[in-house]
Length: 330
Image (spheres, rainbow, N blue to C red):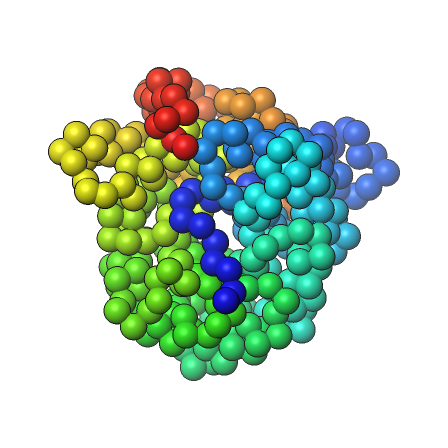
């Protein structure tokens, strides 16, 4: 049987780059594999169930083939050495060609990933019918050396939306083991998570938005693939642990509400500032990386004084993060 990813919180980790001043021989700052390893170990120690490398937040589309291979391979070896063998890693694919998607998946398998998170092909936007999407995923899944998850992010695919019916049909494929929905249609998350025609032990439903964690996991979603958890992993993972615990007691529900409010208010920052905001937050809070943003065209930092405008939000979530013990988030 094709293995499915575990339930829980995955982090779509940003790709760390060395300071631009240290990369004078290159057109762009070099990938900082060592910092990537250290941040990955930090997440593994603080309740995160797995990583997504080279997704949208990971800027895979800004990287060369060899850089992508070296990143996955480096993180896998670093986690193994740190005592996290077989730690779950999904690797993103962000291209539209079937052949190139399969090339990315083959590279990812050789480098040490266990699953491929395959972005829906959206170059032509609405011209991609649901039937066309289903056929595209069938072809990829038939040939993929890794089990794959469907990745629907309308914001980077010209508004392409994968419907609940399409998920139901594709979930029957033996090599398609889940999906990530990076949009705010909670009803579709719940419809797919509760669909009686889907084997939910095999096909796992994740949201890309931590502000939806409680509302979808209570109704049997597998978890989230969430950028805020790159900064405050204990808080997001504690919410996940409570949301998947059955039965739901009054005490747990009260605590879940507190955590969800804290997470949701902080997610407003993530939604507003994206990769640049996540990278600056990671640096300010955990010390990893730089505050130079991503590769062109999304380099740079937050506007002057912007971080301070969110001080109440940071104080609230930092207080929550500091109060949590291992029993809360593992």
